[in-house]
Image (cartoon, rainbow, N blue to C red; front, side):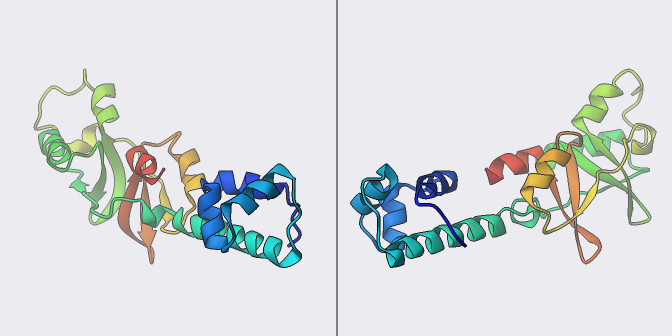
Length: 182
């Protein structure tokens, strides 16, 4: 791949690397990196190639890391549609979570969240009401290797997404998980 030398600084800063860190992993001096970025020196082809190879490897590694399965909560808490609202609230408090997928016959059929309780506050007349009476639509389901860049767009609309591994739910990713991944 052909690169211009002035892209080194841009690529380095996008990766969050300091000049010293790039120099260390490229096996060159920090002052050489600084001079290249300033445009005061043109490195040999082999050194420039080495720097770009290192930057490409860092980008590839970063992209591999930024998939849903790496930042999701694998402890998937579920609640049955005929369980009480009181049970849902207790589960949310116990596990310090803000949403729960709702199941019926081992199939996810809906969701319940803090927002669900707020939106239905006037309808809740008894803590023994069934979750099914106020539940929302189910969270979207995504493959475990979905890139974070796609998940952030989904979480603008939904409070969470369910991750599938071999077609079965194995984790949940929420806005809080996304923030942890940053």
